Amino acid sequence: MSARIIDGKAFAADIRGRVAEYVTRLKADHGLVPGLAVVLVGEDPASQVYVRNKGAQTLEAGMKSVEHKLAADTPEEDILTLVDKLNDDPEIHGILVQLPLPAHVDEEKVINRITPAKDVDGFHILNVGLLGTGQKSMVPCTPLGCLMMLRDHHGSLSGLDAVVVGRSNIVGKPMAQLLLRDSCTVTIAHSRTKDLAEVCRRADILVAAVGRPEMIPGDWVKPGATVIDVGINRVPHPEKDGKTRLVGDVEFASASQVAGAITPVPGGVGPMTIACLLANTLTACCRANGLPEPEGLTA
Ligand code: NDP
Image (tube, rainbow, N blue to C red; front, top):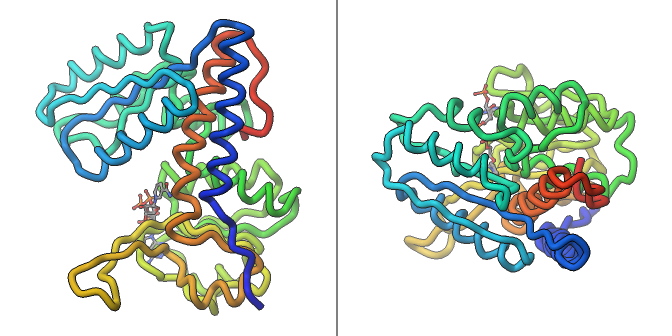
């Protein structure tokens, strides 16, 4: 059997298109332009690429994009002052502080300074609590993207056995909360889990968010399961000397022979993250102005 490949690139393009259409209507009907501010501290090359892509896609969707690039040695107090300023700016509906922050900055303090309604990454402690108690919140972008793909493939997720490998605050835990909210029976696995292979084999839905190249082989996958591979790992290219390539946490070649559906790396979950960031910014703008939320773009 060969799995259906879930095309995250096409899915993300569709979401961005729907966001752009809604933004056009917001402008025409209400004179509103959703605004996203991204704060980047330091010169981490990967973060710079992410921030550039976020800015470009925000503008393409017809939204306002503001970037604040601060030196790596910017004092924590200055970052907090900037967050306060953005919190008070009525043209900014979403604030994203690019992680990781330099070691001298307390990440939790900075994230928790963002007004929860503008916290489009969904990392503020209030949003975490709201999600955990099943209330309306801002939902972290990567798990939201995974959920959208799963709902699209399955329709209802109710009663399915879901295993999430990884328990980070950014991916694993919010993913598990979302699956629980959609009435899956959820297991969260991590580095101390006993017999991970057996745990994975129980999953109708297997989400891998570990950061270890191809650690989940095909024989850990239940036949017909849906596999969502969040991992992004750069490894040496097997055929091209000195070159690298990206692989996921799942061994795609073997897993795609067993699974019913699977996301590839690259081109699976990755593109969904920024698309969901745009969706969250639009949602935040609608909520701030007492307007209905865009359908199908929230959890
Ligand atoms: P973290 O490093 O924060 O968390 C990794 C998790 O994997 C931890 O919970 C850890 O367990 C668990 N783990 C580590 N080794 C094992 C093992 N041998 N067996 C089982 N579990 C293990 O990573 P993130 O959640 O931030 O990211 C995970 C992956 O997803 C990375 O590759 C990252 O690049 C990618 N990613 C992709 C995004 C996208 O847009 N597609 C967005 C965000 C992340 P423990 O807690 O016990 O240490």
